[in-house]
Structure formats: C-alpha cells, structure tokens
Image (tube, rainbow, N blue to C red; front, side, top):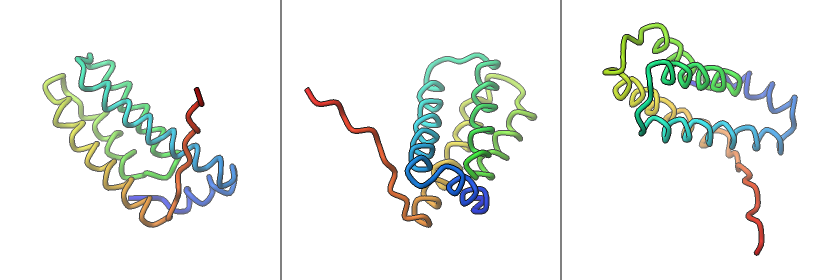
Length: 116
C-alpha cells in the first residue's frame, strides 16, 4: 500500500516541514482531481488525470494507488468506465491516506488563513 522507504527518503531529502507541505499538496491535488471528475470530462482528460495521480502517488510512496492508476491507464476502454474506475481508485486513495496518517502520526500543516 505504502512504500515506507520512499516516504523516509522523501522526508529526509526535504525535511519534516516541507514533507508535510508536499503531502498536503498531494492530498489536495487528488481531491481536486476527484472534484474535476464530477464534471463531464473527455477520455483524454481522464487519462491525463490518471497519469498525473499515478506519478504524484509514486513520488510520495503511495504505490498501490499509483499501480491502480497505471493499470487503469492501460485498460481504459471508454467514457462509460470513468465512474467505476475512478470509484475504485478513490477507495484505494482513501484507504492509503488513512493508513499513511495513522502510521505516521503525521500532522499536516496548512497555510494559515490571511487575516482581515
């Protein structure tokens, strides 16, 4: 599910604060991709989303999610599959995210809100 060696390597390379920022951005981008898929997307747009999530997931150690995206990219036959494929990928994402957060005790930082 999670490549903990990749997680440790990334965290060591960027430091804890930047690592938390990277993870926040990753989670946000996957959730934005999910929101984008609630609109009508073309098959090319769907493939682009799969490719983007695949690469992002691999870079932060979410190997199962990355592998599912790669498999979906290769087997995707048409727009009638978008909802079912994405539902499976999103389920994997949620499980991986929960597993990651529960096993790291990671407190993810968010940007402070601007003050009025």
